[in-house]
Amino acid sequence: MESLYTIWEDVNEPDSTRALALYDYIYEGPFYSAPDSALVMANQLYAFTKETKYDKGTVDALNLKGYISFRTGNYSDAFASYKEGLSLSEKINYKLGTADILLRTGFIYHDNEDVVNALKYYQKSLKIYQEIDDLDGIGSIYNEFGSIYSVKGDFEKALEYYLKSIAINMELDDEMANSAQYINTGNLYLNKDDYEKALEYFHKGLAIEKERNDKLGRASALSGIGSVHLEQKNYTEALNYLESSLEISESVNDVQGSTSILISIADLHLDLGNNKKAIEYCKKSLALAKTVGDLGGQEYSCECLYEAFRAIGNINQALAYHEEMILISDSIQTEETAIKLQQIEFSKQVLEDSLVQVEKDMEIQMRHQAEVQKKDKNRNLAIGIGLIFFLLAVGFYIRWRFVKKSRAILEKEKNRSENLLLNILPAEIAEELKEKGEASARDFELVSILFTDFKGFTEKSAELSAAELIEEINDCFKAFDLICEKHGIEKIKTIGDAYMAAGGLPVPSENSVLNTILAALEMQSYITRRILEKENTDDFTFEMRLGVHTGPVVAGIVGVKKFQYDIWGDTVNIASRMESSGAVGKVNISQETYELIKDNPTLKFTYRGKINAKGKGEIDMWFVEKI
Image 1: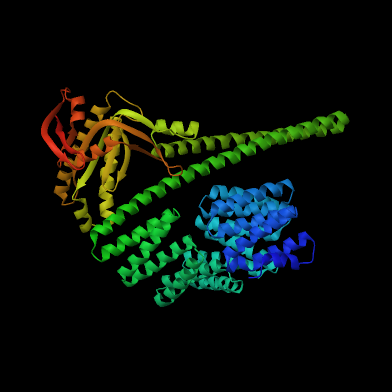
Image 2 (image 1 turned 90 degrees about the vertical axis):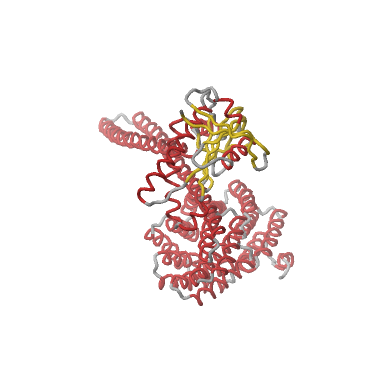
């Protein structure tokens, strides 16, 4: 490839024209075919424009650097370039550069499914594009709005915005700019099962991407065509297109795209009964999804592996991936809850901004009326002013009623968000998180840890469908939740078929040990009753072991995006051994727990002697029951 330095010297024009020519050269050439080379050249362009103090060129170079980094998945570098470019463009009042950078910053948030922040940047960008009458920019924003409505499942709105964007590019005589819109529209029709329309738009996009040699674009179009053939059961055609797409995605290190394509190929092999092939592709997709934190890809890959291993009779592996899939699904639900909270907060901020603007408008209008009264005391004008005041008063009254109603709606939404947060975290921790923005880990000297585990869960899972298995576990865990709430102990988490709770945190209590034991006894009583009920109906349920140990722990929030309250310490490990060393239908407790409640007259204890616990040696254990 020709050196950028040579090209710079060959352009016998002012620096501004040179910079523009180089920008076009990079964007139309190596940007699509060789992103790594394009990034090197963009850095050189940045150096030239800085050296010649051509600020607009520097903004364009930073914009280009950021966009190349974004397309290759390097979001941190993209953010850094955009931040520097935005600061400079606002300083020199370069509106087009500002709008372009705001739009592309929105791309990053959109790509990471943070729609709230993506919309903030899109709306700021759209306002500037409309102000400078830049149709190309407006068309790009319409395309992104279409993608947002597509994810929400609003087909009509999504199609409306995609077609608006396409129409603008047609008006600008820039058919080449429609490739993304065509591919997006193809995906829209694919989701509606309109395969003929989907293929029409995918092929349109593919033709453009081939012409401009955009590897990522070609991979996306080929994947779309392969997906259509897969839905139509045209397996040979589907595999050809999907493998071609995968080859391109891997060549440009497009991890997100490769993950999606690997899952589609795995689905194809599952349909054909090639279970070993399906396992091979699902494992690859799972590994890639984990490298980029793609929870959706991880969940689907685990589901695929569960189906494939179950089909070949490897029940243990199938169960392991099924449990992993459930854990990932829980994380996704927690993340969706956090997004809902974000959206509520965003709506609240929008309304508050509107109220501030109303107050400013009122102040401006009142000053204007005062000036009019002062300048002209004519009676007819005074009547007119009075009429204006009357109309303003009516308007303000209507606005006041609207604001009052909006505040009531906000209060309702706030209460909903509070309830969502309390479903994730203990009340005290949630309150600290809201006040300080963080919740510190704490040491607790006396906490009783409760563990339960279902006997024969693995064997039963081989006999039952996933739906039956999950339904039974869910019924039991819902009952345990109510028992924990009744006795004032905190549910910590579920791990597969295991249930973990703790007494004495996040607020220590004198009765926490007794309350934990009472909760444990009630859980075993519930399971005993359930077994008797199920025997009468020939339905299945599980027998259960339950163990309790008391001691010091550290407790706090895990993570920064998907909050989870968790506890650590050797006390947790010993509590787990109490459960695994226990007996079906019994509550097994440690010597430490026994010493704290042995004088309670309502409880009866049976010494079991020293029991060998895995990794902990011999431990004194007791069975406890109610008198």
